Length: 234
Image (cartoon, rainbow, N blue to C red):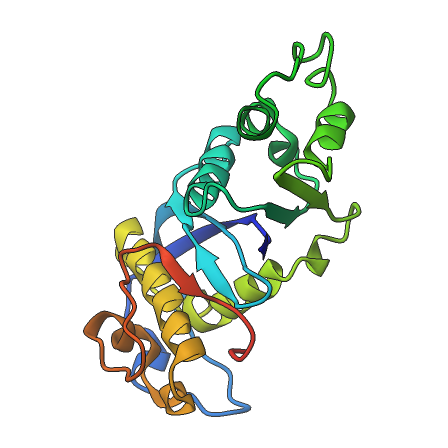
């Protein structure tokens, strides 16, 4: 299974007046109008992945930070869905993707007797290149493939983030971070139903369908942190 984990920071604000697009239908070729007065509620970080073959999103994390520990926790949650499988992760070269914690996690799961050394001093953990080489080892059951520098856009999850930004965030107004989090999960669930269900689902309201279950097709538990954000939705 090939997944592609990455990170997106989402900053959202709430309009202090009703938005024009709330009462004027959106039509092709017409720009949306927004009031500039708004109240900021902070930011959420979405750490997500994309299974290339199916478009499935497995165990995304939505929280206030995107630290080394957050990324390791995300990878651990993915691997724990099938602890004996071989996992290949495609990711960019962000420093948190080559961290000491990630090396220790892979070492614990794949090479229990490995001497990892000490960060900045010796062994595998000494430098970022040495940690990268260890994570790329093809003999490991859990391994990473890193895209070249400045080519993170080659990672397909970036396409998924673009879809999410256009469909959910671009014209959104959220009264709280919790509302933003629920909207993101609703959209991931909607995409899961869209991937599996009939094409008529395209006509269903994106913000209400996932939560209310109006879509026909296979059932999806929106609280299971699983969904699809793949081909077929632009």
